[in-house]
Amino acid sequence: MASITIRNLDDLVKARLRMAAARHGCSMEEEVRQILRQTLLSESDQGQLGTRIHQQFAVLGGVDLKPTERSTPRPAPGFVNSDE
Image (cartoon, rainbow, N blue to C red; front, top):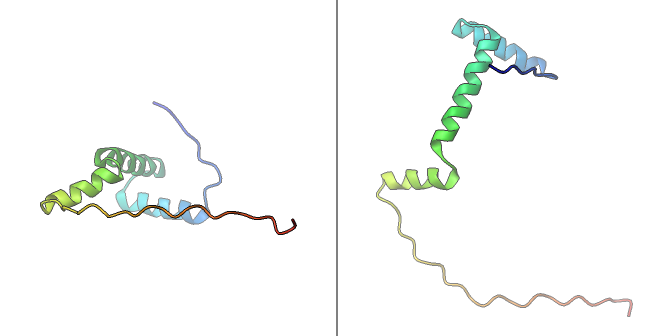
């Protein structure tokens, strides 16, 4: 198992971590392990943003959007040196 040290932790964050650990009946160290485990393992299961959006709409039967009609882009503006 690996170990890490967290420096410069805000006092408020530390206090809230201590309270959360007390509520769950564990040490602050165990509370941090659980938070990291829940956050990082559940994140990888969800997929990336596009996949999550697709999953939300797939439940509703999907959404068909017509392609956006595009016009020819305007030419880029010319820059003229006013000193000349």
